Image (tube, rainbow, N blue to C red; front, side):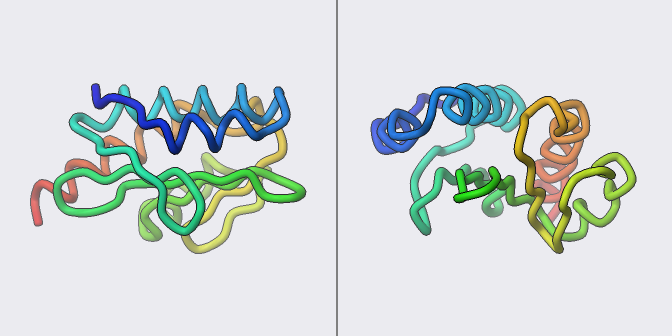
Length: 118
């Protein structure tokens, strides 16, 4: 598992407690699921890079939280993400309980596999 970084810690510290807890849990999931993930900040949000590219990023927006994933995998798992506001590569949610963390884990694992085969 990759080490966390101070800029991401600072980002999370500025959030309301419920959002901080939700995104900290998502952060842990990413770091557990993506071997060797390098955590950083891009576009003012936490991003995670691995060999072959960026598998995901997340952000706290004004009215929701966002998880950014690989577009074709978001489309592939759209049914599992039903009930959420799903864009081309973005999943928007207000409460972490509404987001299927099992589906996110599968999408991240598949992303890593795709990146390795490129």
